Length: 107
Image 1: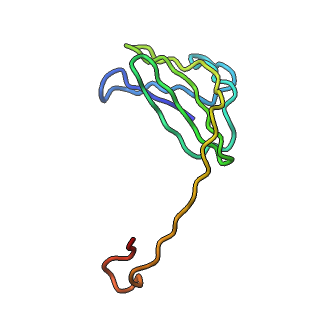
Image 2: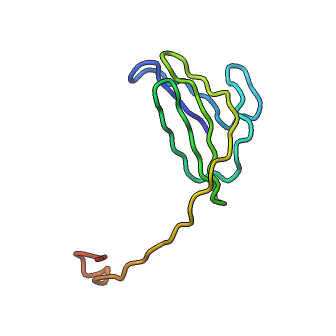
Image 3: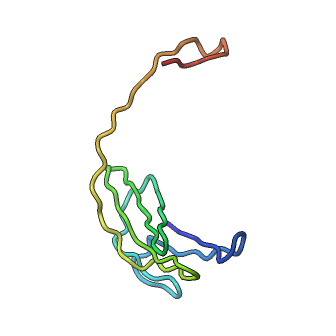
């Protein structure tokens, strides 16, 4: 998984591999990247940015990056966060059949 940042709006994007277990030339390590990631979120607050991922077995993991000014450094391990609460799916009845057009679902 990669995170990228352009030094200027519309500028060339600099990418870093956030699933990199060992450092490579110009790309620091982010050990402990979880398996089976299915969703990603990013949050930036000042000079700190956080990438959170959710796995198919309902675990949440996070890593931190330094993104102030011209810096863009992701060199911290992934840490497991609190698990997500159980999700309940809700179904709705069809208001009309699909071949009649108009409103399909109603609450």
